[in-house]
Image (cartoon, rainbow, N blue to C red; front, side, top):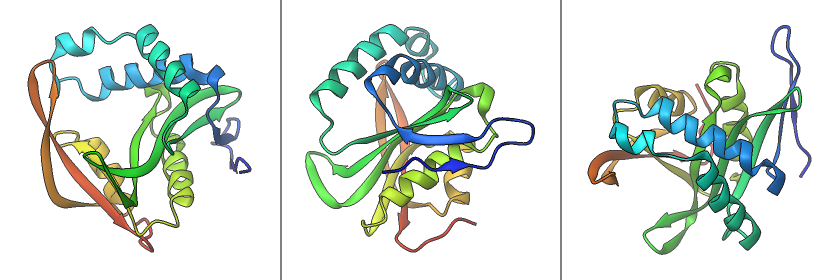
Length: 186
C-alpha cells in the first residue's frame, strides 16, 4: 500500500499516513497513553489514568507487533518526520466470534495536534482500507462527546448497543457506532 500524502496544513509540513513499524511502538504508546489521560479525564477513575505507563504499553505493543496481529492493521500519521497520531482497525470482534464486518479499534492523536486534520486523515485511510466490508463498527465511551461528534461527522451513527467497560473496578459505559458501506462523511 502506498502511503497517501495529505496537503500541508497552512504554514506546516504535509501529513503522511503510513503503516506502523516496530520502531514506532514507543511513540505510538506515548500518544495512546497520553491520549487516554487527556480524553478520559473525568470519564474514568483518575488513579487508573495516573497509573498508565508509556513504557509498559510500549513493551506490550512491541510483543504484539512481533507476534502478528490477527488481521489488525495499524497506521500512523506523520507530520514533518514526527508521528502525531495512530489508528488500528481489523475484523469486528463480537466476543470471540469474528463477523464479516470491520472494526475501528482505536484512533489517538497527540493533544498538541488535535484539530489539525490528523485524526480525519487516519480515519479516512482506515475507512478506505475497510472498503470491502459491509459495515465498520467502533466502540466509544458514552461520555466522550468530542469523539462522538468526530465519528458522527464522519458518517457513523450509534446503533443502540451499549455495554460497560470495566476500568479500575468501575464500569464505564461504551456505545457502539456503525457506518454502513457507501455512507460518506458530512
